Length: 296
Ligand SMILES: C[S@@+](CC[C@H](N)C(=O)[O-])C[C@H]1O[C@@H](n2cnc3c(N)ncnc32)[C@H](O)[C@@H]1O
Image (cartoon, rainbow, N blue to C red; front, side, top):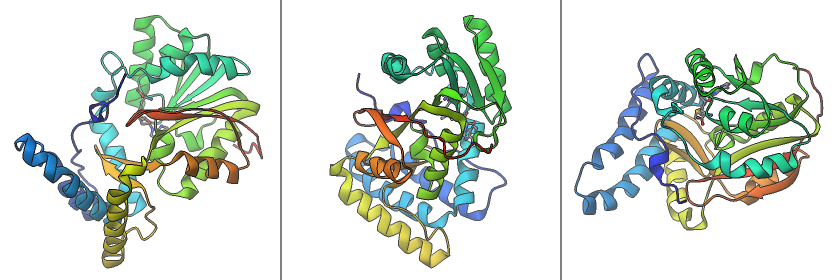
């Protein structure tokens, strides 16, 4: 099945109570959406150029805490978007047989679980699932969904970074594309470290990314140049990285598979399997956990 951008959220969020950097960026990003209402032949020409410009400026303007605010606001205002009664992308069912074949045991942490969509698939596949999400509304909805669909899973409200559960999971699974939503190599490295802390030695870490296709090179380069220039002029995020994007009210880092392989190698982690996605589909990495320390 081919997956289109409509699988992402379709509107920008309008954050209240955030910094001027977030408010200005949200306004700019909303311009691209406004152009979607133009006749197709005009919007098809304008949107790529406009998105390079508005995303580039916003990426340079917003510091990382601003981006965190923007993203938190989007999740808060789009809870219904992730309701598993209608949000049902096919990715998890597709990778379930691979997961079952590599998982050393049934105990699974479903990180960033939202409203229990993946938990239903994995519990149905024989896993003993603990879902974690920092938004109480998501967890309450997940509990209702599990009761409705009659599947067993344990759901916990907690921040992934501060999660206080007994570690040693056989599988640490993180929601589709989550690795690509970590802004900065340091955060991606901390993410991998956290997965290792929570996973048993020799257990399985599963995460996914949005891939950066080679043909996107000119746009990516231009967006990066605009971001860098803006960051210097506005004392914004001078640490912007090549491949970063901002759309649908969320942060994305479109990563090449080579770059992810490099980051895993730097973290001393071995890839067991890669399941490549086409276009906007997630590319899944199945990685063997090695636990450097387990100080949770
Ligand atoms: C894109 S939604 C996905 C929900 C679900 N996995 C799905 O695909 O239907 C991401 C979820 O991650 C949660 N989240 C984001 N950062 C988090 C963190 N640091 N700790 C725990 N949950 C987090 C958000 O609250 C949100 O519910």
